[in-house]
Image (cartoon, rainbow, N blue to C red; front, side, top):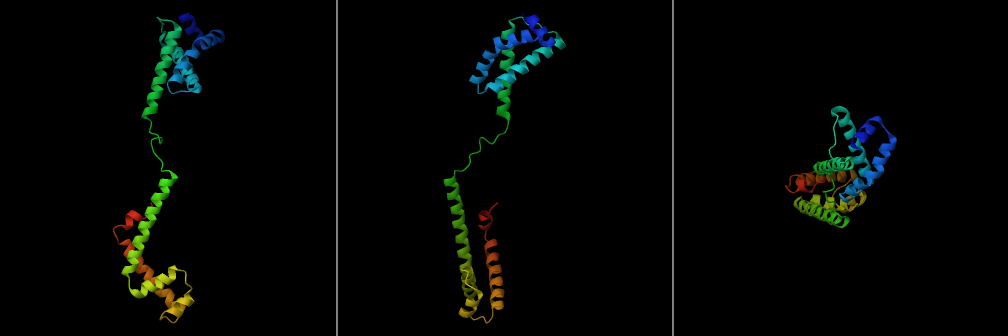
Length: 185
């Protein structure tokens, strides 16, 4: 039957090809399913194997010494193993472990705490006047109230002072060695 099946593959004899499918596909499907595949994979492998056998027979005139079913199964097995090996070589993101929400939230909280500590530490290092002005500014105190509680006589003067003090604070923070590790990427 081997020679008839090979010729039927090339000639497209649907009667013999259907018999090959009904006789051999269940075994190939079982093998693929047992080896990390699904039914679609089995169909693909079976089709590729038939095509490969047909092309080889047309080009080389191969002869099959064993049963055609045994030969077909061996070809399918080899194709599926190659397919599995190619999966192993592909770089995928399945190995990347995403932080769960709880751990991610914890990590973000730690980073925020470290940023706050750096900010407070550097705020303490600037002059008393700047510290006072910036504390009021960061508390969202209106400029009119800042003028009333400080020695400045206009909102414009307070704005200029806030600008200069913020610039000094930013400089101190950015010049700290911890700053680069605390900025978001």
